[in-house]
Amino acid sequence: MFTCRFLARLSRNQATLASLGCLTIPQRLASHRILPSSPMAITNALIPCTSVNANRRFASNEIETETTSSSLDSATYERVCSETLDALCDYFEELTENAADLQGSDVAYSDGVLTVNLGHSHGTYVINRQTPNKQIWLSSPTSGPKRYDFVGGEGGAGKWVYKHSGQSLHELLQQEIPNILRQQPVDFLHLPYCS
Image (cartoon, rainbow, N blue to C red):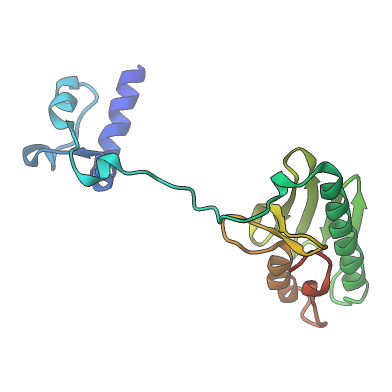
Protein backbone atom coordinates (compact mmCIF):
# COMPACT_ATOMS: atom_id res chain seq x y z
CA MET A 1 0.00 0.00 0.00
CA PHE A 2 2.76 2.43 0.97
CA THR A 3 4.70 1.62 -2.21
CA CYS A 4 1.69 2.36 -4.40
CA ARG A 5 1.10 5.73 -2.71
CA PHE A 6 4.80 6.59 -2.93
CA LEU A 7 4.95 5.75 -6.64
CA ALA A 8 1.78 7.73 -7.34
CA ARG A 9 3.20 10.79 -5.56
CA LEU A 10 6.50 10.39 -7.33
CA SER A 11 4.85 10.26 -10.72
CA ARG A 12 2.93 13.46 -9.96
CA ASN A 13 6.07 15.19 -8.81
CA GLN A 14 8.60 13.93 -11.35
CA ALA A 15 8.56 17.21 -13.29
CA THR A 16 9.19 19.14 -10.09
CA LEU A 17 12.04 16.87 -9.07
CA ALA A 18 13.59 17.08 -12.51
CA SER A 19 13.46 20.88 -12.45
CA LEU A 20 15.26 20.87 -9.10
CA GLY A 21 17.99 18.69 -10.55
CA CYS A 22 17.33 15.82 -8.16
CA LEU A 23 16.71 13.34 -10.95
CA THR A 24 16.81 13.15 -14.68
CA ILE A 25 14.23 11.49 -16.86
CA PRO A 26 15.23 9.84 -20.14
CA GLN A 27 13.76 11.53 -23.19
CA ARG A 28 11.71 8.46 -24.12
CA LEU A 29 9.90 8.56 -20.71
CA ALA A 30 9.63 12.32 -20.21
CA SER A 31 6.09 12.53 -21.58
CA HIS A 32 4.78 9.35 -19.88
CA ARG A 33 3.28 9.09 -16.41
CA ILE A 34 4.65 6.37 -14.20
CA LEU A 35 1.84 4.22 -12.96
CA PRO A 36 1.97 2.74 -9.44
CA SER A 37 1.31 -0.69 -10.91
CA SER A 38 4.56 -0.67 -12.88
CA PRO A 39 7.51 -0.59 -10.47
CA MET A 40 9.94 -1.41 -13.28
CA ALA A 41 9.01 1.83 -15.02
CA ILE A 42 10.19 3.81 -12.01
CA THR A 43 13.48 1.93 -11.94
CA ASN A 44 14.09 2.71 -15.59
CA ALA A 45 13.01 6.35 -15.26
CA LEU A 46 15.16 7.33 -12.31
CA ILE A 47 18.79 7.93 -13.08
CA PRO A 48 21.05 9.47 -10.44
CA CYS A 49 21.67 13.08 -11.19
CA THR A 50 25.24 14.09 -11.89
CA SER A 51 24.48 17.76 -12.43
CA VAL A 52 25.78 20.66 -10.38
CA ASN A 53 22.63 20.58 -8.21
CA ALA A 54 23.44 17.12 -6.85
CA ASN A 55 25.95 18.55 -4.35
CA ARG A 56 23.97 21.70 -3.67
CA ARG A 57 23.59 22.93 -0.10
CA PHE A 58 20.54 24.81 1.05
CA ALA A 59 20.98 27.52 3.65
CA SER A 60 18.50 29.13 5.98
CA ASN A 61 16.97 32.41 4.96
CA GLU A 62 17.19 33.71 8.50
CA ILE A 63 18.99 37.00 8.94
CA GLU A 64 22.23 36.74 10.87
CA THR A 65 22.44 38.94 13.95
CA GLU A 66 25.13 39.78 16.44
CA THR A 67 23.29 39.34 19.72
CA THR A 68 20.07 37.39 19.75
CA SER A 69 17.58 36.45 22.44
CA SER A 70 19.22 33.03 22.85
CA SER A 71 22.29 34.79 24.27
CA LEU A 72 20.21 36.82 26.76
CA ASP A 73 20.25 35.71 30.34
CA SER A 74 16.84 34.97 31.85
CA ALA A 75 16.68 38.08 34.01
CA THR A 76 17.45 40.40 31.08
CA TYR A 77 14.90 38.62 28.89
CA GLU A 78 12.20 38.94 31.56
CA ARG A 79 12.94 42.64 32.06
CA VAL A 80 13.05 43.51 28.35
CA CYS A 81 9.98 41.41 27.56
CA SER A 82 7.94 42.88 30.43
CA GLU A 83 8.88 46.45 29.51
CA THR A 84 7.97 45.80 25.86
CA LEU A 85 4.60 44.20 26.62
CA ASP A 86 3.71 46.80 29.27
CA ALA A 87 4.46 49.66 26.85
CA LEU A 88 2.47 47.99 24.06
CA CYS A 89 -0.47 47.39 26.40
CA ASP A 90 -0.51 51.03 27.54
CA TYR A 91 -0.26 52.31 23.98
CA PHE A 92 -2.98 50.00 22.64
CA GLU A 93 -5.26 51.08 25.51
CA GLU A 94 -4.64 54.73 24.62
CA LEU A 95 -5.32 54.07 20.94
CA THR A 96 -8.53 52.11 21.49
CA GLU A 97 -9.91 54.61 24.02
CA ASN A 98 -9.47 57.44 21.51
CA ALA A 99 -10.89 55.45 18.57
CA ALA A 100 -14.55 56.34 18.18
CA ASP A 101 -14.93 54.15 15.11
CA LEU A 102 -13.93 50.87 16.83
CA GLN A 103 -16.99 49.16 18.24
CA GLY A 104 -16.37 46.32 20.67
CA SER A 105 -12.62 46.87 21.02
CA ASP A 106 -10.86 45.61 24.13
CA VAL A 107 -7.30 45.36 25.44
CA ALA A 108 -6.34 42.75 28.05
CA TYR A 109 -2.94 41.89 29.49
CA SER A 110 -2.44 39.00 31.87
CA ASP A 111 0.27 36.41 32.54
CA GLY A 112 2.46 37.64 29.69
CA VAL A 113 -0.34 37.57 27.10
CA LEU A 114 -1.51 40.82 25.50
CA THR A 115 -4.82 40.45 23.66
CA VAL A 116 -5.99 43.38 21.52
CA ASN A 117 -9.49 42.87 20.14
CA LEU A 118 -10.17 45.50 17.49
CA GLY A 119 -13.74 44.41 16.78
CA HIS A 120 -15.28 41.84 14.46
CA SER A 121 -14.26 43.58 11.24
CA HIS A 122 -10.56 43.91 12.15
CA GLY A 123 -9.85 40.87 14.30
CA THR A 124 -7.68 40.23 17.34
CA TYR A 125 -3.95 40.67 17.84
CA VAL A 126 -2.31 38.40 20.41
CA ILE A 127 1.21 39.22 21.58
CA ASN A 128 2.75 36.94 24.18
CA ARG A 129 6.02 36.05 25.82
CA GLN A 130 7.53 32.68 25.02
CA THR A 131 9.95 32.22 27.91
CA PRO A 132 11.52 28.84 26.95
CA ASN A 133 12.58 30.28 23.56
CA LYS A 134 13.23 33.79 24.89
CA GLN A 135 10.93 35.18 22.21
CA ILE A 136 7.81 37.26 21.78
CA TRP A 137 5.16 35.68 19.59
CA LEU A 138 2.62 37.66 17.59
CA SER A 139 -0.61 36.47 16.04
CA SER A 140 -1.91 39.09 13.63
CA PRO A 141 -5.25 38.90 11.82
CA THR A 142 -3.54 40.63 8.89
CA SER A 143 -0.13 39.00 8.51
CA GLY A 144 -0.48 35.81 10.57
CA PRO A 145 1.85 34.36 13.22
CA LYS A 146 5.43 35.49 13.76
CA ARG A 147 8.16 34.79 16.31
CA TYR A 148 10.39 37.64 17.39
CA ASP A 149 13.89 37.37 18.87
CA PHE A 150 15.47 40.19 20.80
CA VAL A 151 18.41 41.64 18.93
CA GLY A 152 20.39 44.31 20.63
CA GLY A 153 23.41 45.57 22.32
CA GLU A 154 24.38 47.07 25.59
CA GLY A 155 22.73 50.03 27.28
CA GLY A 156 19.05 49.37 26.61
CA ALA A 157 19.22 49.53 22.82
CA GLY A 158 17.68 46.73 20.83
CA LYS A 159 14.53 45.49 19.16
CA TRP A 160 12.39 42.41 18.63
CA VAL A 161 13.14 41.09 15.13
CA TYR A 162 11.42 38.48 12.96
CA LYS A 163 14.49 36.73 11.57
CA HIS A 164 12.92 35.61 8.29
CA SER A 165 12.23 39.16 7.10
CA GLY A 166 14.32 41.36 9.38
CA GLN A 167 11.25 43.42 10.27
CA SER A 168 10.82 44.39 13.89
CA LEU A 169 7.67 43.88 15.95
CA HIS A 170 7.11 47.63 16.22
CA GLU A 171 7.65 48.15 12.48
CA LEU A 172 5.02 45.52 11.68
CA LEU A 173 2.52 47.10 14.08
CA GLN A 174 3.32 50.52 12.60
CA GLN A 175 2.55 49.10 9.16
CA GLU A 176 -0.74 47.37 10.06
CA ILE A 177 -2.47 49.38 12.81
CA PRO A 178 -2.72 52.75 10.97
CA ASN A 179 -4.80 50.95 8.31
CA ILE A 180 -7.32 50.13 11.06
CA LEU A 181 -7.19 53.36 13.10
CA ARG A 182 -7.42 55.87 10.28
CA GLN A 183 -8.86 58.70 12.40
CA GLN A 184 -5.79 59.22 14.60
CA PRO A 185 -2.01 59.26 14.33
CA VAL A 186 -0.24 56.03 15.29
CA ASP A 187 3.44 55.81 16.26
CA PHE A 188 4.73 52.52 17.64
CA LEU A 189 8.30 53.58 16.92
CA HIS A 190 8.52 55.74 20.03
CA LEU A 191 8.01 52.79 22.38
CA PRO A 192 10.85 51.01 24.23
CA TYR A 193 12.91 48.41 22.34
CA CYS A 194 11.89 49.44 18.85
CA SER A 195 15.35 50.43 17.60
